[in-house]
Picture 1 (tube, rainbow, N blue to C red):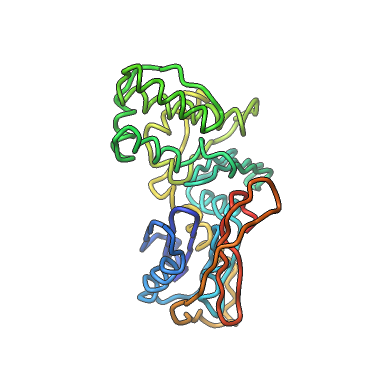
Picture 2: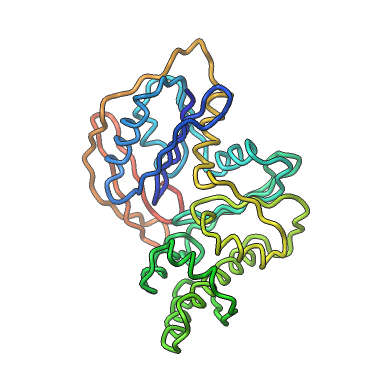
Amino acid sequence: MWIGIDIGSTTAKLIVLNDQLEIIDCLLLEVESDVINIVNKLIEAIKKHDIVSVGVTGSARKLISLCFQGECEMKSEILAHTMGAQLFFSDIGHIIEIGGQDSKYITLNQNIMADFKINSVCASGTGAFIAWQSKRLGLSVKEFDNAAMESQMDLPLTGKCSVFVESAIVNLQRSGYHKSDIARAICTVMAKNYCNEFIKESLLDRKVVFLGGVSRLKSMLRAFKLELNKEIFTHEYAQFMGAIGMAKYAKDNYSKTNGKILLHEPMRFNTKVENCNDCNNNCNLTKYISNNTEFLLGGRCGKF
């Protein structure tokens, strides 16, 4: 079996493909404070499969790669999502990907990645922002999505920075607007800000594909369709696309002479918090320390 793992800042995704590249198993876990525990849960989940090769991506890909001895491939999330999308869609020109804490825009030319952009600094265009605003409205994310789909009103909500957008949302609440109308306004401003940041005046002459956890929301899909005035394609496994891409990559690049992959015992690390002073963000980082290994995870820019 061909295993793909995408372990990011908010969720970890596991995909198992057979030789025909059909999905035969999947798993999604919420990543909270204990990344090591999530890694070990993923390892336990794949032990029941006859593993041939594994591909890993995401912010903690280096961490989980330490669990394997043998064929383990590592690639960036940009490449992973692109490879995954190409398994289900043809003639892709543009990929919108919005995850828990960052957003990406990928352009392709003749099925080859031509350019990409990443925004991992401002939270106003990510899944974390939707989760927080849903909580502010007293709704679950699913209830937020359903409420937004019920609204037919376009409320005036503007702002690029999460602080200003949140202030505008508070003002709408105080003015007595219905939750469903506020939810729709949040989706609209997120789609508008994404397009202004990434797409701008680009010619969308080919297929646009929407990936990532936020693509599961019908209200966000509608917001992008209205903003771009164009059909937007997505997939039931859109949130797993990075893992799917890595499973396919593991199969395509497997060398039979190297033998099947071996799993190490559950990982055990000591941790301590350090501060990064490379820029004005001064992010807190977590250092993971084992017998012969230590590395850093965290931060806003993706450096670690």
